[in-house]
Amino acid sequence: MFTKILIANRGEIAVRIIRACKEMGISSVAVYSEADRDALHVNLADESYCIGPALLKDSYLNMTALIDVAAATGAQAIHPGYGLLSENPQFAELCETCGIAFIGPSSQVIKRMGNKDEARRTMAKAGVPIVPGMDAITDEAEAVRVADKIGFPVIVKASAGGGGRGIRIVRDRGELPRAIQMASSEAMSAFGNGEVYMEKYLEHVKHVEMQILADKHGNVITLGERDCSVQRKNQKLVEESPCPVMRPDIRKKMQAATVAAAKAVGYTNAGTVEYLLDGDNFYFMEMNTRLQVEHPVTEYVTGVDLVKWQIRIAAGLELNYTQKDIRPDGCAIECRINSEDFRNDFRPSCGKISLLHIPGGPWVRFDTAIYQDYTIPPYYDSMIGKLIVHARDRREAIRKMQAALCELVIEGVNYNAELASLILASDEFVDGTYTTGWIGEAIEEFKKL
Image (cartoon, rainbow, N blue to C red; front, side, top):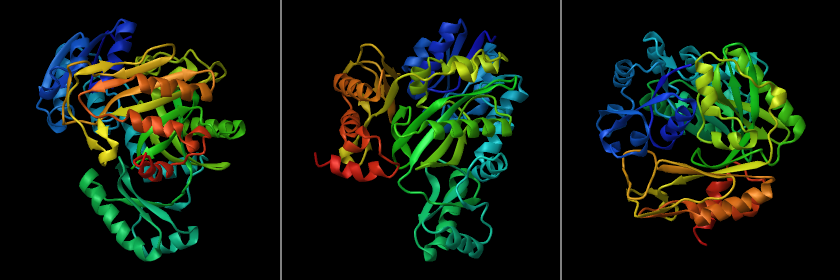
């Protein structure tokens, strides 16, 4: 087992990893930018080092600085958290070259799954259902012919994409050539790779993801699914487990497909396979080769600490769970708490927190890095916390979350607890029928309330 781990991240996920390290008796090394000098993760870690100015490219994305700190402090492993460098194959490869364990899958797996077009082909070979479409587009005329065959609307996606960039939805064949060009141009600018592919655009579907753990001894288990369909501009707002409309027979098929997907690429560590659920059918969307923001809902329903198991697997330990041991219980819901004003076009809100009250009670969890008198800097993501609850059933979980949202107080900045409350009170959420396209329309109605 490792004796010292460097956390190559910031905010609530850095705090989450540090806590896991403390519970495992592992020393932690934090890194921070000049803007994060007073951040919570800096104070909680056993050692902390400044690695550059506020901008991400000069600090948290500075691979050389991270490796230098790890080497200087004797850290045997680096945990990348999520976002930032967590799915960067070059960083994972650099860690491997320097003899530092990367807490995640291998650089080759990250690279292979990071190219969404290659991931599609790999999953198809493994027998995992994929959305009808066209691999790497090299001929616009051929793309039009394929689109005519599978039917409009279609969606053009960047092969190396992420975060909603390099994506165009096309509803008319005459729009397709320009959409391909625009998506390719945007992808080249954002990712340095202009390759795009095309799929049938499925509307009014569920975005469901299946959590996996895979060790280095060939064992792969699934830990149930999460419904992540409440999302605005491809950014998730509310997640829950289990999916409220998932039938047991469909879940069983999705679990089998997920294990097949992991084994097809030789996956190790924690990961997530994302699907589009369309009635009784589901289709592979992508594989996230990292810890997910919404991992706490899975931890609540299964009792499995995913961060600790990430560390154990990276150290070479074998899973002491079998699939039969995983018995999800009850319902868990997570609301992302963002410092933004949803009534003002989601404008980010920064500043000093003058008063903070965190909800309490049984099975209520608030993962955050904020504290009273902390100043939220303007340089980073607007998510400042994750509120998670667990209850015996979904109905109770919704009530528990509504109560927790009412109890959460963050004065000094705008935050989105009101929006989360409106979502949970809506008929679509209560009956579980909400889909990926729902929230965009609902928000305009919420603003009128």
